[in-house]
Amino acid sequence: MTTATAPSAPLTAIDRCDRCGAQAYLRVQLKSGGELLFCAHHAREHGEKLREVAEHVQDETDKLGTPTPSPEAG
Image (tube, rainbow, N blue to C red; front, side, top):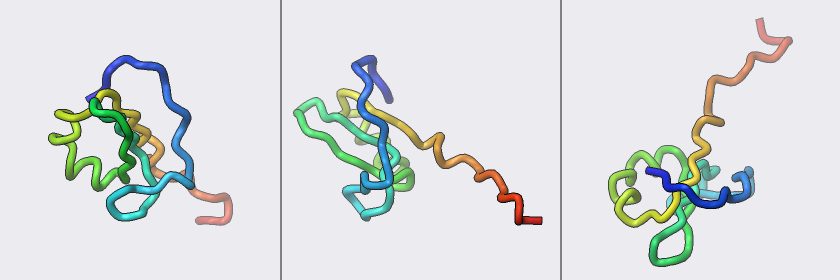
């Protein structure tokens, strides 16, 4: 779903999903201009359509890996 273009700034906790307001992990730059932000859930839900309209996709869903347990846990 990605194409080779200049990298965008990393997504942060301030970036919110345009669909539900959750933290965004996917930035889609549209062929028609503009961009959309999606949480991982909505990125998966709309993935097929996004591939059709995307110029570039910045996917940071790898940040959702299993969290490291804190030293106090256990």
